[in-house]
Length: 258
Image (tube, rainbow, N blue to C red; front, side, top):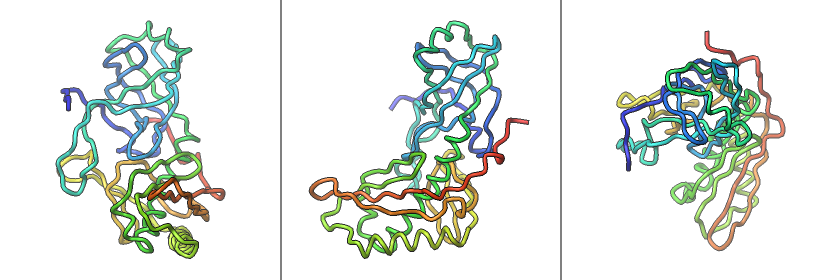
């Protein structure tokens, strides 16, 4: 796996409610800009990336449709077997705005502004995904070791499992009850970094700890009561998803860089 010496400072790790920040352009590609720092969360851990706009010194506004982590590598820590660390983050520019890349030069200052409403919904959804996971771990522990992947979107999240035994209606109801009980308690949520590398992070809620580098709301009550649904994907494959019709977010929590 290719490694490079450059590293993008991940401002979202330092302040998850930061929505605007200034940074310097490091590299300009045919369809993207790399900065030395960003508050935009790149796609990873199942969570969709932030979207937003880069405002150049000239005043040009380049909308980015994704943020991507590039040239990361496994951290080598046993508690984080699937997590990539280090590397850089590319902001992929909307095709219609790519002519504006001609105005961008390495060393220039650019302001990153993320779509706050999108980030907030993804953040709450990611926290909800962990509560769903805890419900599955309690009532169908056999499925946890057979997780195929997850997808965290603005209105909820899903997990796919390679299991022959289907989730029964009773199990789904029990999983939903466990997850929603954690919502009702409005528990505090915190994250921290491993002492070996700050990109290897953990999610904490009550006595539960899950390795995760995504963005999270700081209390579970914002999720609202979730709906848990099952879908058969084919022989030996099941999907459980949570939907969040009662999500409560406070966009006033977000702020620009001081």
